[in-house]
Amino acid sequence: MGGHTIEAETPNVTLREVNVKNLEAILALKVAEPQQGFVAPNTKSIAQAHFFPEAWFRAVYNTEQPVGFLMLHDEHLRPEPREQGYYFLWRLMVDESSQGLGIGRLAVEALVAHVQTRPKATRLLTSCKQGPGSPEGFYLKLGFVPMGTSSEGELELQLSL
Image (cartoon, rainbow, N blue to C red):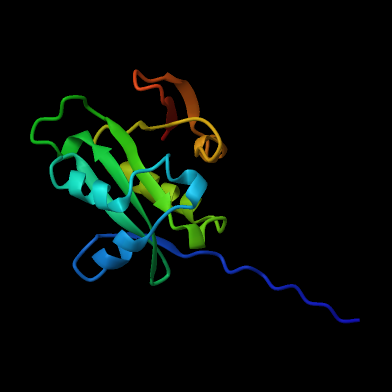
């Protein structure tokens, strides 16, 4: 009785610029139905990014396939930073077809590596709504620590770098 196990391939996650060649693929990505109230569509994020100098946004790739999107608020991209060392994970999404593979975790790890190269980086902040479909558990597993609730009613979290 010979059995064999099929090992899942470890994702090879990279963060790449959104450009004319991958834009349509990035715009087509979407989260699973129960998560849709927790993250803005990529169309909105990319539009916002063009009006906020502090927005640093990237496509999340698994090997050569675009599978997600993230956007960082990097205060040091502003001509005059209002708060030194302010880095906030503004948006993160992984397409429903690529969830559960560790891509989100690897994307955050790649983002952390980027933030660590930035001025005065000691922490990465984020926030999320709570409830069924919330990314709260995902962030807690990554080592983010709850800091309380924002004025908008979202749970604020912090990861020490």
